[in-house]
Length: 89
Image (cartoon, rainbow, N blue to C red; front, top):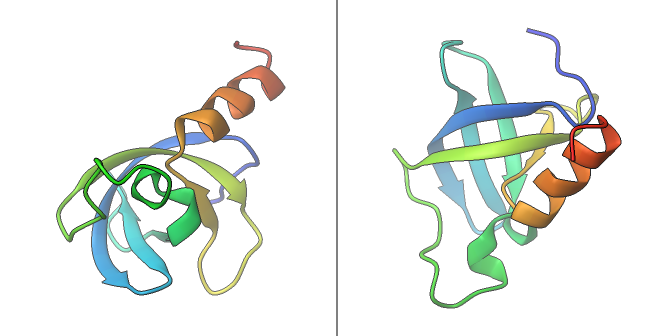
C-alpha cells in the first residue's frame, strides 16, 4: 500500500513504546505506520489515556516516505489541516 501526504486512515495500535505507537492500517494486514508520542492527543491532554494495543484511531499521513514506517498523526488539529490541504475543510 502506498501512502499519500495528508491522506486519512483508520488504524489499530499494535505496539507501544516510550517514543510512540506502531499501528496497523485497518483492512490492510501487515501494513504499518508510526505515531510519535507528540502526535497522539494524550501527550497534550492529561485526561486522554495514552495509546494501548488494540486501540482504534483515525489518523492522517504526515510523512509517507519515513522509514521503516510512515509517520501518522492522531491529533485532531493535524487531521483538520490535512483536510484543508486536500480542499475538504
